[in-house]
Picture 1 (tube, rainbow, N blue to C red):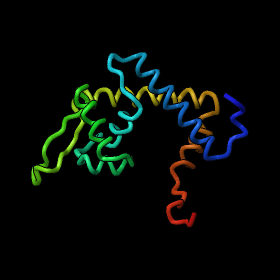
Picture 2: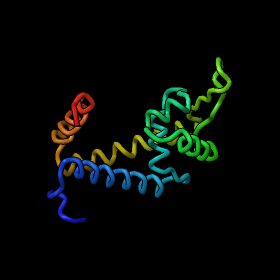
Picture 3: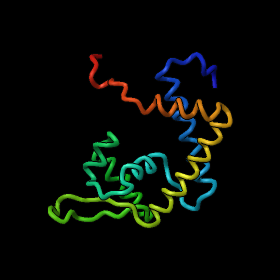
Length: 146
């Protein structure tokens, strides 16, 4: 990696995000029997705790419906999610995590907590807390002109 300190904010956030996602995926795949991609984790985070429609999931992750359907079908084949008709409208499909999906999601949350603890060892727990607080603040970017 080149000198990361020379990157602007956008590229720096992207680089760190890419590093952490790659590391989390590698750690999961090293520990687990079932390979799960970052895209699948991203969808599982949007599905966890509910039964959103596939259209709702697609809007939340900002990918096409076709790509969302393909990814959900792949996750269903792995036993991570179930797809069912909506009770009120049979044309609408709802998706939920299976017991295996919930179990994998919980294990991955623990794995990410371990990574956060490693980061805290490197930069200090106060810095991690401050970073989380800064990233959680509404930066009001949608309300500003380009």
